[in-house]
Length: 435
Image (cartoon, rainbow, N blue to C red; front, side, top):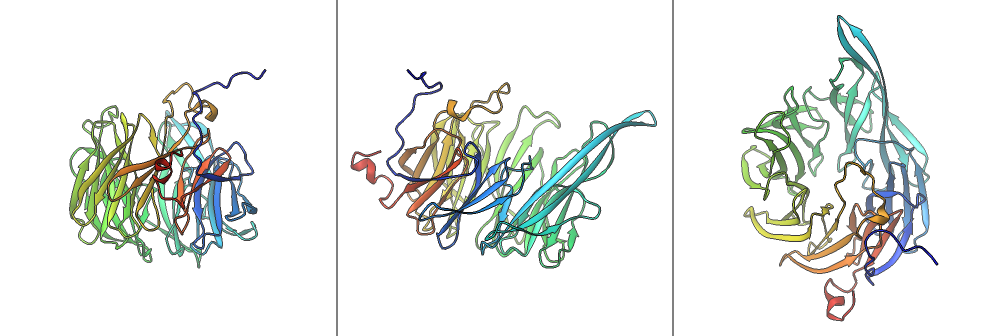
């Protein structure tokens, strides 16, 4: 007789599950899920395994496999795809260090190597490489919407006092010429491109790592064109999105009443005018140590969605963009992680994944089989109501995306992509007594 399965009891998987696409790493946690614009292909990569797989969406056949190499990177969203689905960009870095003493001080010498590599998505072959001179460790990489430029966040080799991190830098790269364009010192190595790819917004930091401004740069010239001051308590600032019409910038601040005391903080969602830098709206999170994540606009730009993390409740907020007022605050689960919500192509529906993952420092990598199953909440955007909740198979679910026709929802599972049939609208199966 088989031993009973450990962990929480299983809930029946929703009958909307119609297919599973198996990744080469059958136990891997998948990220970077996306449909091609014509809906014929699906892509996802395992992290930290570095295997990017493309499937034929209608048949589930494995098409191209890109072996980028196992690596711990600055983000699990480690690859960037061009809009034409011809090229995928992947950053990598290598670091080594040695200790020594100088003038009575303990020092550390960091030596870095790294690059950004471009792979042909049809053949899986390496096509070109972008490298600093001398090489740097690439912490992060982000591609512009038109794929003409990308931003890297870098670490620079050198000698540093023990306990001090290596110097950060940010570089804009021209894809056609391979020309790097360095940005000023003091920028956080993350940025957000405008939809037209002409502007990038980044946080500017003081010597202690707190944000003093949001700076906008002209991508072609790598020159600053606007600075938005951050005032009040010492904060970390994150720029998350431009509105589709490029009028607004949305981000959030994580403010600390006492400098270098991080056990007490307050997060606030901020909206700025992209032309003038004027603050237009401010929405504090409900409760301390509760931050915002998954900030995204609907396809028509009329609704802004944001989720919370680390709070008592997994909550989703919907805002009216024109009036900048809160429309709905929806509680999805208790003490659960909310993955980035995604809108359907017509903007009518929103899908959000929640999963309870115990915050146990003694076990930072729990067995996925021991976790409660992921739940996929399907919401009516107009009413803010959860019309249906799908139970996924056991595993860690990190992201979701709709097919271009809105008839299928894809979500990541353990070593597989799950395809959910949405030809019947959310709530229809509940009315028929299904699940």
